[in-house]
Amino acid sequence: MTTPSPAAPAPVLVLVPGATGAPTDGGAPFHLADATVPQLSITDLVATRGDGVFETIGAFDGVPVNVGPHLARLARSAAQIELPAPDQTVLAEAVDAAITAHPPVAELSVRVMLTRGIEGTGIPTCWIHARVSDDWTPYRAGMRVAVLDRGLSTTVTETSPWLLPGAKTLSYAVNMAAVREAKRRGAADVLFRASDGYVLEGPTSTVLVRRGDEFLTTPVSAGVLPGTSVKSLFTWLEQEGMTVRDELMTVADVTGSDGAWLLSSTRLAAPITHLDQVELPVDPELTARFEAVLKGKA
Image 1 (cartoon, rainbow, N blue to C red):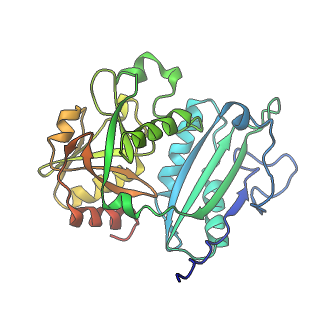
Image 2 (image 1 turned 30 degrees about the vertical axis):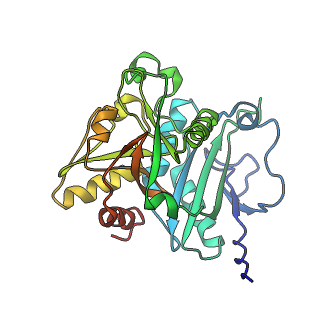
Image 3 (image 1 turned 30 degrees about the horizontal axis):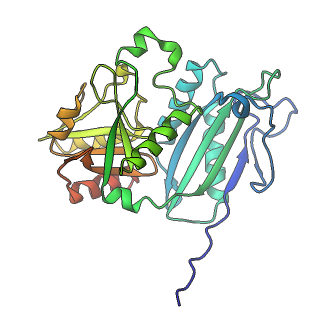
């Protein structure tokens, strides 16, 4: 007879009416709310059109990582879809409040959501949701990844900015469809390829490729999200005497490399064991060091 696992602590919800300016009712800029009852209007434009932006911050043993870079990227995404600029100081305090209110856990996922708000009001909606992170252990040990065509060129930032390349929006249906397709192919995740042949990023991650003592990632100019995790690793790798740079890479460049990872703030560094049917080298020791850096513990 097995002993059932203890239930995970309940998630924490913080509503942030002061995310883009003083609340219209004169109240506090943010407050704790009941995460078990409805809080979002069905006429909010995030529900009817997916019109909003978000960030997910990892907190490890109660300490959040890269809060400033995440909120700066949220502001960048908000500007791309012409939302009012978020108050990053208020949001940072609200993130801390959410983490403090949550029972202590090893890994916490803190999601900051900013939407265009209820249709016709012109007032954005913002909330922060903190919950126990998913168990990413299998991914961190290594995973198969499928290459899928994204249908966009690496010149999309210049030619078609209205497609919002590099914005972290809440319109995630395509990304989730891509992950489902990868799983149908026997893979755990996706590496998108541009229509001109260069690799881009994962649906929820940034690619990092090793070539000897060089570590490479796709340039933001190709229309990918500016990764907070890869920036942290680049800083650490440079301190370790490695060379880091942005470079357009083909699938062959990745499969012929000395290793590759998909990086994110909660999953951390997931080594790619196979890209489609090609096996890649995996360095568990280096991956463990990457994990420590991305947890803020290096």
